[in-house]
Length: 178
Image 1 (cartoon, one colour):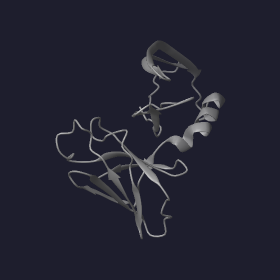
Image 2 (tube, helix red, strand yellow):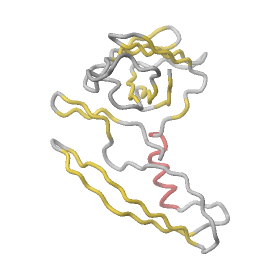
Image 3 (cartoon, one colour):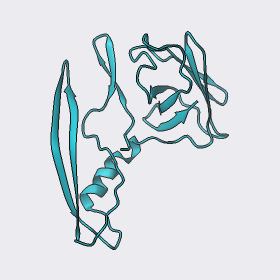
C-alpha cells in the first residue's frame, strides 16, 4: 500500500509514529473481466490509541461499478482530493546524505531555486533505527538543511542506508534515501 506521511504522537515520555482522523491507504489493483462491477476484500488490523492502545480489526469489502470511460467514482475522487497532499512525493533533484555514529546527520541539498524550509522531521522506513522520542535539531544551510538524529538504543551501529519520509513545515513530504 501507499502510506500518507506519518505524524509524531506523544504519549507521556514516549513518541509513536502514526495517523489520526481519516487516513486512506492507496493500493493498485488490476480489474479483469467485464462483469460491470469490481469487488475488493480486505482483512484489516489496527490499533486505536489515546492513552492506551486497543487492537481492532474488520473484514472489509468494497464494490464499485467498472467505468470504461475512465471516470472515477465521485466518493473516491472526493476522498483523494481531501488527502492527496498527505502522500510523500519523490525528492527529485535532491542530494541526500547521512553519516555519523553517536549522532546521525541527515543532510539534504535542494535543487537550485528551491525554498529552504524552516523546519523538518524525518520518519525512518525501518523500525529500531531512531529514538522516536528524541528531538531532531534542524539547521539550515545555504542550499538545504541538516537534521541531527539520535539512534535507537537498540540499534546495533549506524544503519547501512537511511530511508524514509522527510516532512517539511506545512506538511509537504518527500521520500528520501541516503
